[in-house]
View 1 (cartoon, rainbow, N blue to C red):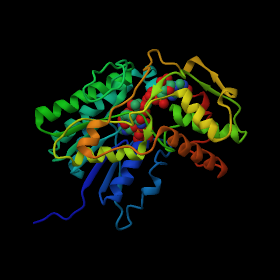
View 2 (view 1 turned 30 degrees about the vertical axis):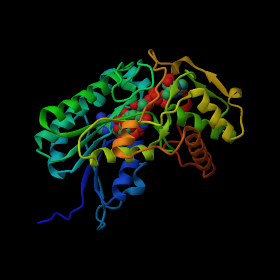
View 3 (view 1 turned 60 degrees about the horizontal axis):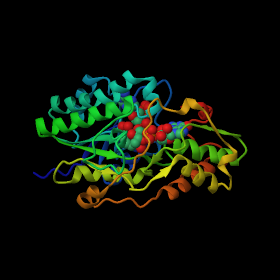
View 4 (view 1 turned 120 degrees about the horizontal axis):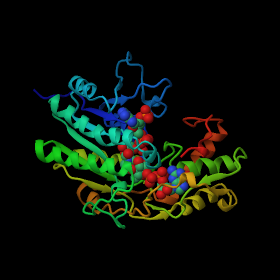
Length: 345
Ligand code: NDP
Ligand code: GDR
């Protein structure tokens, strides 16, 4: 008998930037989506609230489950109950600077969390395809351009934890025949980017300074070079990796390079300001070891998956600034408004 029920996906990190775009994509494709959320004393689902229908409503295709990547037995129970066709492991302590403050927690979540989930897949006997959110931070000190054969040289507890997750994913593919892939994604941003990552910190400040509600912006290393793409396009690449006939690891990037200084200029220009009048240096935003330059090569993803980016870094800066200006005019629209994020890492 032909199974006509919708495909089921299990997404960790669904409340994050990528998880929310991936959930949108999967729901649009007709999937039943199950997301893992952490229990917190405040609501942490702002990025997916627009997708969430009352579970009592017929036709609700998004279900959220409490759990945590540090709780392996819960992952087994959940996977056994859901029996997903696809598992996307996006959850992580994802802030590089914070990983120097919380190296052990970062290792536990961003590193060991992956093996807990892979073990849960195995122990629950789930027949599924598995996506691991690997990162260009694994390349660290190895000079660009970086592709799938570039050696890893991580420069932070975060990068080191992601290298572990990369290899354990590959090992489960080879040892147990699991269809498991690593997407090695370079920096990707959007209006849903967390407020303490550099692009959003800049676009949000540009909007606020232009509106007269912020006077200055404290920053760290402006010379760092990054390959910044647009998050909604990158989650499409994740999905394509799991639809391919063979499990392989892919770099996802734009193959272009800009400095943090360039991003400041692009963003402040959009609101008609000269960034140099407002930006000040604060050493608290420096990292003990920095990743100087990340520039990807997405050739393999283009050849094998037919994936290519369309949004350039300058266009990305415009999208993000315009969003932050509009949100401010509406008198809100931020995930969190009352905190002085300019003083956060
Ligand atoms: P975010 O920081 O926006 O989201 C991280 C998600 O992980 C949140 O949903 C968070 O939940 C969840 N999470 C954190 N710790 C745990 C835990 N212990 N158990 C369960 N869930 C947890 O990250 P992005 O969306 O930007 O990135 C998604 C993934 O891709 C991450 O693994 C990141 O490291 C990786 N990556 C990101 C890149 C980028 O440029 N954005 C590039 C390359 C890789 P909560 O909301 O409760 O905090
Ligand atoms: P990154 O992103 O470390 O590349 O990790 P982030 O935006 O935090 O930093 C990019 C670069 O900007 C420099 N920088 C600052 N960064 C922050 N956050 N705040 C500042 O004030 C500041 N000033 C300068 C940084 O030193 C760095 O060089 C992101 C995360 O999403 C990871 O999870 C992901 O794996 C990688 O991208 C690819």
